[in-house]
Structure formats: structure tokens, C-alpha cells
Length: 193
Image 1 (cartoon, rainbow, N blue to C red):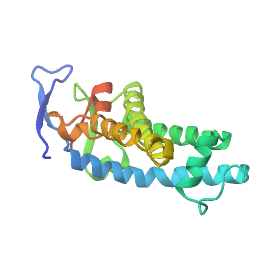
Image 2 (image 1 turned 60 degrees about the horizontal axis):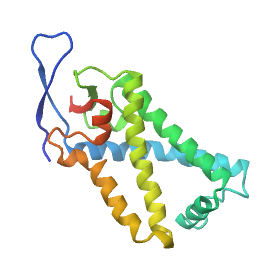
Image 3 (image 1 turned 60 degrees about the vertical axis):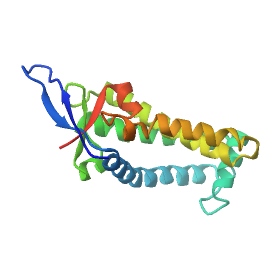
């Protein structure tokens, strides 16, 4: 998927300027770099919760995904706290970087920036809206992955996961303007710098 030129009207300018939107693969690589930044923070939160409640939050070396499914199905308060703190970390990371710097660390490495439909830097409110759409889509995928591994949902979850991935994250790969659903929700573009 190559980058394309998309006209983005500038608020106080006579003629719209043209910006090159970032393609799907460049955006995906930036997201993977961001994941490498956020995951250690999430693991730190998990280790701290294990230190506070070792009986309810087993160490990372135990059972792998099985323990997450078990804690999820049991409705463990510590697991719910970990999920909520993880959501908060991801929302904070994306909102602050997009709202204050216009791009995350991964996007900086790959020379892309998030702008509003006028080509301006995002406000914190718009960055939060984009973050919410982005993180919600990712959380739905994680939730569906856990449900896929749960025996009673083996038939429904793969279909639902495929639909959500296609409509959310992968939408940027098929959209003419290279915008994911979180971009449409927040009125943003990811452009090359």
C-alpha cells in the first residue's frame, strides 16, 4: 500500500495544502514500535499488582494465557484492576503524545504525524477521542482472543474477531484515504513528514 496525496484544507489559508498520507505498512510498523514501548509499562503494572496481591495475580512465569482466561472468567478484582490500569496507560501514552507532540515515539521513528482534517496538530480532546477509538479496537481484539481460547465460544469469536479487525485496524489498508476507523471517529489523518 503506497502513500497517496490527500488534500487537507488549512483553516486560515486561501488554498488547501496537499499532504502525503502514510500507508498501512508504515503505520503498522509505527504501532509495533509503540507496542514495544507500552508493553514494558504494562508488565511493570502487572508486577506491582502481583506484589500487592500475590494470591490473586500469579507471577508472569505461571500458566501463560491460561491464567488470564481463568482470571477473566472468575472476575478477579486484581485482574480487572490490571485491565483498567493497562487501558489507562495506553490511553495516556497515545493521548499525550498525539496531543502534545503530534506523534508517538513509533511515528517519530517512521517520520509520520497525526493531524486533524485541517492539517493542524491535534487538540488534547481530539487526541483523547482518537486514543479511545484506537485502544478500544485493540481491547476488543484482546477480549475476542481470550474468548477464542474459551471452549464455549470457539465458533463465534473467530468470525467476530475477523470482522472487527477488518473494520477497525485494517480499514486503513483498504480505505482510499488510508484512514482507520479511529481516524474517521476523531477526524484525523496520519501523514508523512
